[in-house]
Image 1 (tube, protein in one colour):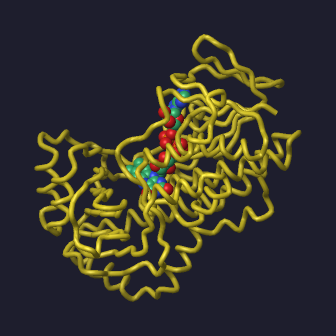
Image 2 (cartoon, rainbow, N blue to C red; image 1 turned 90 degrees about the vertical axis):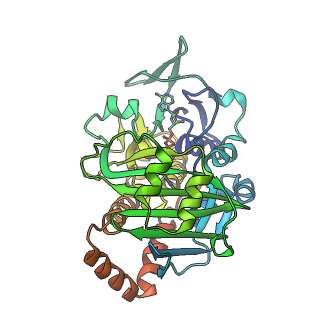
Length: 379
Ligand SMILES: Cc1cc2nc3c(=O)[nH]c(=O)nc-3n(C[C@H](O)[C@H](O)[C@H](O)COP(=O)(O)OP(=O)(O)OC[C@H]3O[C@@H](n4cnc5c(N)ncnc54)[C@H](O)[C@@H]3O)c2cc1C
């Protein structure tokens, strides 16, 4: 079996590593001139770290990332409302370092860069991809081309991302913060706004802040830093210090793909992984984790059914849909309840949150980390 992969982000690169491990032949196409990502951070969970070890890149990942031991939800005065009960919340890493870790084991003959795929056709005998004046032939193709996927738009146009109502500003800042910020994530909730600071190692922090803007229409800020200082004026000095220390702030309207029973995860010989099919809001830091889980599961299903890709795709979808549905719904729900508009709503929310037993949060947290559903699958 020969597999084509479209996209060299987290999902495409993880698929390549997993297929390599499963001894399945592949070739990856990436539109950019190099494997790279933007100047922002992500947090990956401990179960993802386990999968990265299975894929042979776990040690490099651990070297490039920072353990987050404390997840502290606070009000906008930095007073704790709730701590997530775990000493291994996850691992903070620069996006570009994660891409380096995932792409390092690939050989030059495994991929083609500067190859934006627009033309892709399938019939009973296979799939053809046109890239850089060459036609490539594959038995199946994995679409890992992200939330705005050209491939999904062509083969499953009814599946479309939607704007979630949130605008996010984010980046990476180098500055001196008190010790309580080390190996920790602080999520500060204020009226219809949130500000998050996560340790990335040494004096580096990745951060993001979010505002709920329902209609999605948003003006261009004339002076972005001034705008953010004003928007978050009642937040602690640390939030303002982080904004001042970052000269490359990125603005992102957040989108996700709503779960729907009609959302098939494959169309004949084309199968979808990552944000292309299960993009979620970043609220519980799971999109990249789920992309890696999907890549791993898909390769394991193809290994199990080397001569029957349809059975492999069915099993992949069967295994992955329930977990990603839970993640997408939980993530969106988190974004909804953490953005209240009125002071009394916050007071109620904080009181309820304080009363929530740790066992409840622990159960939800464990569910995001649960990969027991793949115990019967091997690479
Ligand atoms: C603000 C924000 C914060 C986040 N924080 C976290 C977090 O803390 N933890 C977490 O786990 N997740 C997080 N996520 C989610 C995570 O970033 C995504 O789920 C993940 O990057 C998806 O990877 P992907 O490979 O599916 O898509 P992408 O990263 O979008 O990669 C798609 C790749 O395909 C390439 N491509 C696209 N079209 C073509 C084409 N036609 N031909 C060839 N190549 C093509 C692109 O260049 C790109 O390299 C966050 C997301 C956002 C928006």
